[in-house]
Length: 262
Image (cartoon, rainbow, N blue to C red; front, side):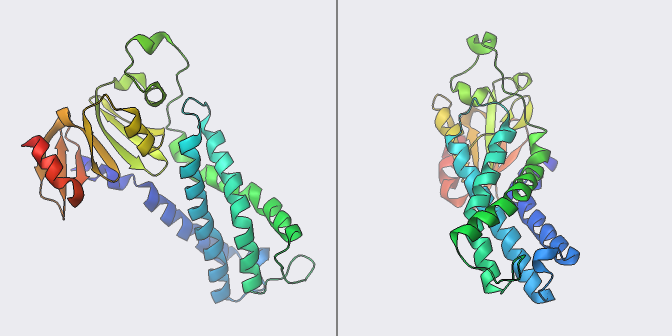
């Protein structure tokens, strides 16, 4: 069933990995100036390190930033762009080191050296494209994010954890069913549907202490009242919820979840 596969089909880590491989191959084939002096094998190494390591750094920065970024802050694209700039700054020493490792000469023909001037120059060169690419990679999800509600008219019937619920569209109601982490994104399931929000999984779980829910997997959390059954599935199981959604249950949580249902 589609509902059984939904968390996998929308996997953000898989999307990032595939995007990284595609970008690496694209740069190798286009042969931009930084790698023109390299052979095919060295070019693959050069761009693999530049793209894949940079994406890993960007994701780590984004995950960290999402934990301290104010939940009510509007325009999530600003958070993504900020992560791009910080990630570019952290990657600059790696980029210079790769150029030294592969003996890539600079614009003046002189081999790269790990100096303050080289780091500043590297950051100025990579910050704009890195930030734009990071925003572009996130764009498909950013366009689907609901606008942050600034109205206080809904406060009367809004549950606790307003920072969390302000990110969830009102038309989904407030009958929470489950949460699924997609790295720095969070898919929120209610009895009326689901939505993607820019919110860390750990913060959401901590923000919902009044809800009788339990973590069933490192990336999934479910409300006890909506649990309907546990199917055999790998080492853990598949938790069937009232909406028909099935979430994976890790071996660590299987006995606990089984006891709640039975």
